[in-house]
Amino acid sequence: MPDTDGGRGTAPGEAIRLGDGLRRWFLRPPRRHGEVDTERTVSFLELFYDLVYVVLVGQAAHALAEDVSWRGTATFAVVFGLIWIAWLNGTLFYELHGREDGRTRSMIFLQMLLLSLMAAYAAHADGEDGRTLAVLYALLLALLSWQWYSVYRRDPPGRRRTAGQYLLVMLAGIALVVASAPLSADARLGVWALFVLGWCAVESGVLASWRREAEYDVVTDSMVERFGLLLIIVLGEVVVGVVDGLANTDRSALVITTGLLGLAVGFGFWWSYADLVARKPPREVRASLVAWIIVHLPLTMAVAAAGAAMVGLIEHAGDSRTPAGPSWLMSGSVAVMSLMIVAVLPTLEDYGRRASAYATVQVVFTGTAATSLLIGWARPAPWLLALSLQLLLLAAWSLAFVRWLRDGRLLNEV
Image (cartoon, rainbow, N blue to C red):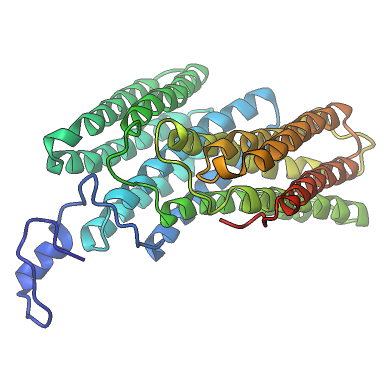
């Protein structure tokens, strides 16, 4: 790659002094806006980074599994929103500005230290642990803001406006999170909810304005892959939910059957996303890129929540009716996931060429969402609930597949 940091380039085979090599490895500044590496692939470091989020999401989902109530669900949604915003900031910075050098690695590992500490407090975020979690989260945001500021300093004046707006939103978020630390648990969760909603709304406006007339491409194959990997992370919670449920219950034939049927619902999640959304880049102009990014928040949250619902289904496998909490959580997760697929399809790059086929899929998955909620309201036995939702997702995918065949295309074709 060409040397873009303003330093002296090194000819092939030329020896580098130790001091120059160390400075270049650890002090080389990040890439400016516009210096997008379209050929990069997802690195081992990014995969390692995402593993820490596996633990964070797992702790939040574990807390929801223990308290499947309106309050427990609301707490999970807020904490997951905090986690997702942190993941998004770290991921986009690495994608747009990171390098394969010691500076980037050091900053990523520092984030991972903070994230690991946060995981220790995430399971009881609605109690006293929430105070410490707020402080740690503010520190993480401060570190991320400093990274973005390091790019802002190097950007040419014409590209600083959007970066400056982004930094102001981040700084306001830090102040809000810090202010929440001494509050009561309910008030603190309320402030966090305000932060998540406010951040998504304001940043959507900032980023939509930035992409109204795109000066350069920012969507790469590696960026699209990272969002797909996030779904894999939360799908892991479905597997964990099934395993936890089976490990802590007498494993009768009915219990095992219920667990396996629940896991098959997770397979339905994967199949729907993999064939309809995964590895398909969004359009970069106007609000399409922003919508594509933001939709992944409720989409991945719903899948992670389904993992928590699995525990309740297995624990009550012998009941004639599924308890209201797990029933609504499971069916609601399927409904939200289906509606988010409906919402994300118009943002895809190939939507214009396949508008008719996509419209059919949108109708199918809208019906899937409504039917899922009816199943949750009916509260059949846990095994029947899981089977019904799994068959519902299978029917939706099958109808989409038939529509694609009639269109002369395969589902996973780009």
